Image (cartoon, rainbow, N blue to C red; front, side):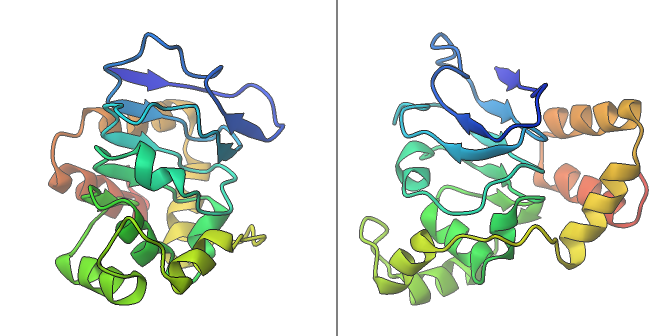
Length: 193
């Protein structure tokens, strides 16, 4: 089951239980791009949710939350491109460490070397936060600028018409393999949709 939410206002949004209907217990794919989400309330998701794919592209998430580890135990695909959090040092490695079930982060397949690097930096025990992990949780990015590939992809997406954006979302929703997601990412990087 998929749920797509589209914000109609420009004010920062906190994702909380009021935003997600309680009867969505079998929800596996949640598309929340372009909603100005800045924070995920702890009570939004139960610990035994079935979410496998979470698209938070182009929101306003600036910092990590410990709940990401506890609430998304089935999460395999996460997209945070277009959020200030992606500018934090060690963002990718920490996200991979924080959510061990991830297979794809920001349209890129997670490599075993990245998992090893995460354990070197943040520890082998994912239930305890070492000093560096605690520092990552306390960091917040105030930088609204995007770097390299994120900026390139963001610029391409901004140039798309509403129909092209809708088609891109449909492709992402119906992708059944990592290869399909990688092809979509490569097309975006090359400016071809």
